[in-house]
Each structure stands twice: as structure tokens, then as C-alpha cells.
Length: 163
Image 1: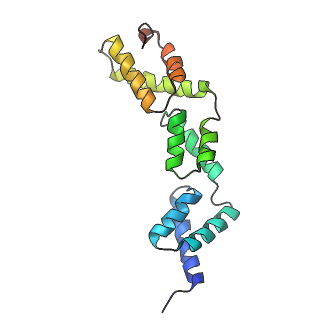
Image 2: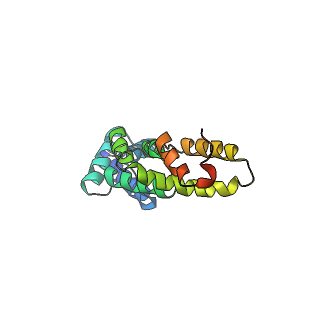
Image 3: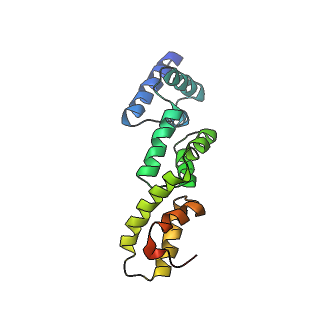
């Protein structure tokens, strides 16, 4: 017995709700997970449209939540937030707007928290090595050079040497 389109739609919708029970997901992520499960793209699109119309998925709301998590918990800079949002299926335009929405002071504060934590790890190393490692760690997290300078200036014990 072959499944009808309505059966597939119902099963796809049920699976989408199962996915949303665990955490919020982007439109792109819902469609790709449905395709991975074996549903055709057309069914995935219908389910995505239904969930979007009913307010179960909202890329903008998800992007705001992910950005807050990226800055406050993961201590990512603008570029890091942008990459994180793209990885979670947020469209590039929305991700770019979200990452650049705050001024550098918000990112500098987050970077300062990371510097403070890293300074404990680097205790006992010479000043130049500490500054070089901090700079590299912040750059890997996606902070711009201006934000890194702002964050390092908050700590006078490492301000003396220049990179």
C-alpha cells in the first residue's frame, strides 16, 4: 500500500513538531532535516510554510536568541556570531544584520570577560607571550582588532607591550 501525499504531509508535520520539541530551529534546518528523513522537498516546503504561518518557526526570533547566546555564553565577536548564525541555518542577510546590530562596547565587554578567564590560565607566563596568546584567542573567536585593543586596555598588567 502506497502512502498518499496527505499521509506524508501529516508524518512530516509530526516529525517537524518532534524536532521543535527539543529546540528552536531555522526554516532551512527544518526542511533539510525533513529531506534527510526521506520526505520530498515539496512536502518539506509545505511543512515549513505551515510552521512559519502559525508562528512555530521564526528565523528572526531564533537569530536574536542565538546571538545573545553567542555573545554572553560563547563570548564570540562579530565575525564569530556571523559564522555561528550561518551554521544554524540563519540566512546570510539576517545573520549579517544581527552580528552588526550592537556597537563595539557590547563585544568589548564580552571579550573582557574572556580575557579575564584566560589570564588565569596564562599565569606564570611572560607578558609578551600572554598578550600574544590573548590576541590569538580573541581573533579566533571573531573579534576585530579594535575590539581586542579595547578589551586588552582594560587590563593594565598586560597593556605595556604592544603587538
